[in-house]
Length: 258
Image (cartoon, rainbow, N blue to C red; front, side):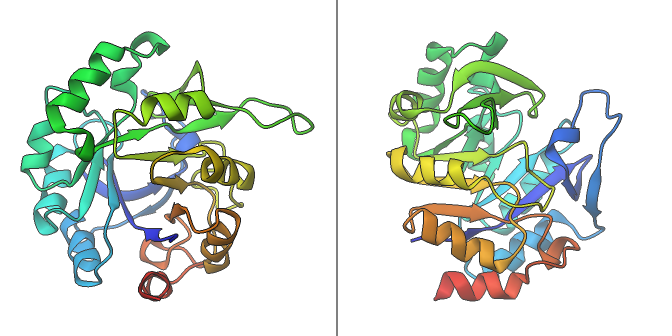
């Protein structure tokens, strides 16, 4: 059944909400929707007390390792962590309390799938502890059949691998879940990519969480409806926890408990 999945996005060691498409290596042009002095552990403890599982701690760039670990320690086994994860450091985050590690760019060096890296990673942490982030951007014209290509390096680099039936079937053999941000609408609160949600509902052979553009509790109910209850939804910038006015966190907790 569709669930609300919480998030803790970290940038420069602080909890923030950022327009995903504005991220860059130089930091110029960064658009921040929200920033708080509350610690990552504060949010993790809130999710723990409310019994909200499967949230994502996302490290956006360098300087976030210790902040992420404080959140994981506050809610052992209740959070997933991603951002800069490799086969070399993945176990350190599981030992710190993560239920899963989330990986994208490391398995796509130079924009190509490195199956040896993927197999090593899956073997190192165990398939049951791995989430593959296949965040993507739409590459089809509005009048065409929808197509999406994977975006890596904090969504800056579009690679020549599509999020399609074959990709989902292939990669599902190595991981427990998929996390898929619609990078075109991430952080903009302008509506979700319904066609992507419906595509994932029909073709993902394993649990999948969608993120991007959700702006109201109605969107959570809509995601449940159009995915037949199979796709979970992350809500970030629109949530009152992060300064948003569209969705009350308390209502999302009630949605999950119902």
